[in-house]
Amino acid sequence: MAVSMPSKQKVYHGVLTEIRHFINSNNLQPGDKLPSERELAEKLQAGRSSIREALRAMELLGLIETRHGEGTYLSAYRSYQTVELLSSFILQGDQIKVELLLTIRILEKEAAKLAFDRIHETEIKALKTIITSDERKPNDRHAAFFSYIFERTDNLLFTKVWRLMYEFAITVEDVYTSSIFYQELIQLYVERDFNSIETLFDALADK
Amino acid sequence: MAVSMPSKQKVYHGVLTEIRHFINSNNLQPGDKLPSERELAEKLQAGRSSIREALRAMELLGLIETRHGEGTYLSAYRSYQTVELLSSFILQGDQIKVELLLTIRILEKEAAKLAFDRIHETEIKALKTIITSDERKPNDRHAAFFSYIFERTDNLLFTKVWRLMYEFAITVEDVYTSSIFYQELIQLYVERDFNSIETLFDALADK
DNA sequence: ATGCTTATAGTGGTCTGACCACCCTTAACC
DNA sequence: GGTTAAGGGTGGTCAGACCACTATAAGCAT
Image (cartoon, rainbow over all chains, first blue to last red; front, side, top):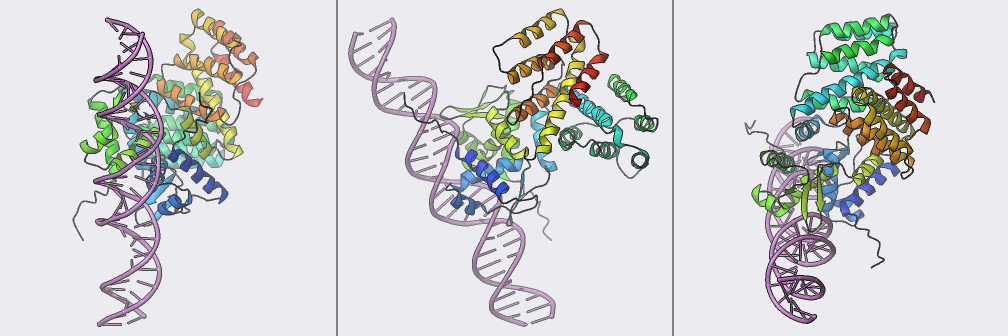
């Protein structure tokens, strides 16, 4: 019947919070350097192992990047390696692969619609250039095509979700479609036919 | 000019891979127990601290759950605490909150459409019960309502993405809408009016 | 036999100290 | 001046020691 505060928060959780605080109050940007592990341990009054547990978790989440012999840095984006490793944990059954592809298609469809008002002559020309380029592999061309579209949705979070899932997906399967599809989508932009976007993507799903 | 294999993979990365292997080959299910840290250390020929770094990373990702004095278990879902902590890292600006809400709305709209063919008399009755229940808080009612819908999309991944973002969102803002909205959506199910779902959600976005 | 209490072993949680491998800077050398 | 060597700082890893907590089993009283 103790009245004691639970307060059982693990040290590494606290460290995580402190590091975030440090990043915010010092206004650290991607690429900036964090204090060394030993320094953090002393400053936060914790063992170095606890600091490391927090740091490794952040690393796997793609929030930081550690360079042996140099230090720990705030990273801009999730590293590819991490995504691949994560995907191997999550993408185990065949069912989930189907779901992943379906989900990606949904996101791309909505992006195509969200960006509709921001795609005109200039953008259409850029999109055409992307799909006619023979430089890239099909998956990369698909990524470049939709990256361009997502950038015009004005929704960075939406874009990040898509990108994350896309990177998951290509570790296990192909995502690109027939080149006709891209051309048809572009054609809809040319004709300013918003409502047919839905239909175009639906046809893809039934394939 | 050494020919030596780089092989600079960190131990905790290897541990991660080994653990995944262990889970797969033993066909462990959510709720099952993992070997103890000391046992893993011996089995994988690694220090306990390296094991813990891998485990903590997995924990923050919501893949496992550790219970002090008991052991480590495969977890079914991400723990709430972790989501809250993660969100504090990611959701820093106001802009991203707007984007989050928009993205959630998109996911919910698509779920409402995906589940369309699986929602009839029985399901409609259940949905009505959920929104008339006064037991829950608005955010919980919203979650229950759409959880029910997402469960009928047959896309577990899609559901998980939504749930994750939803848990992010409610740590910083309200997500529920006016109760009229839910009733209108239900009405569309009653009238078997698929095409108006899109319109209904669009109206929500303009609000 | 049944139920309760209490020891005990096993588990995660944390810290310390010690090395190693690596990177960069600086000082010494040629 | 250019090259090389040494040192200090950093992450990477390990071993061992405690502590806190939980479940189980042993012992006790009823």
